[in-house]
Image (cartoon, rainbow, N blue to C red; front, side):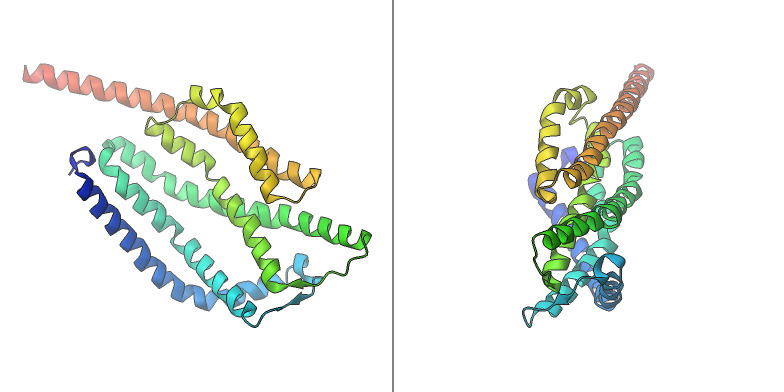
Length: 256
């Protein structure tokens, strides 16, 4: 059934089916996450960034909370491609055959960009911020004693948004394919996009210029890369649409 012929109830039913599939996969992945959470936590605690930081549990529930947070995050990371596929499967009936094949290829790209964003924030940005905060604490004569919950919560708050922000090129490419945005529109709203990215960078990083630039510059570069990708996708979409119209016209002439 084509998506354009589906009723509202059909859409709701299809969405519910896709969400159930995601939930089932997440429940299965969570079981695996419970096994791999401890090795991941141990590995991160032994990393150079965390070795010199004394971690404490200020609440009896802190260790359990961190353990379950890593289990849930691991499960989410495992099924991230499944989530993307179910999203694609939900909207694919409204796409042409060529568009379905092209957009399906976005899934591994999006997953790799998500891992790239997390890796960038963890290996480059996070150590710099930790070093900056430690230096500042030393200059102010403050004795650092972090709770393990606060440490890993800050780690998640920094890495996960970057993983999602690195999806920008894929999202722009996808929206361009659907005809929702165009390269001209992205260029027109560039200054507003820049302002929004500056605000996001300010929310993620501490109030310090270098760390703010370390976040802002990659985000602005991602936006410009997204515009270039949008141009390429827009030209391809126009060629495919012209080809489809030509085929329909030829078919109509043959029937006539």
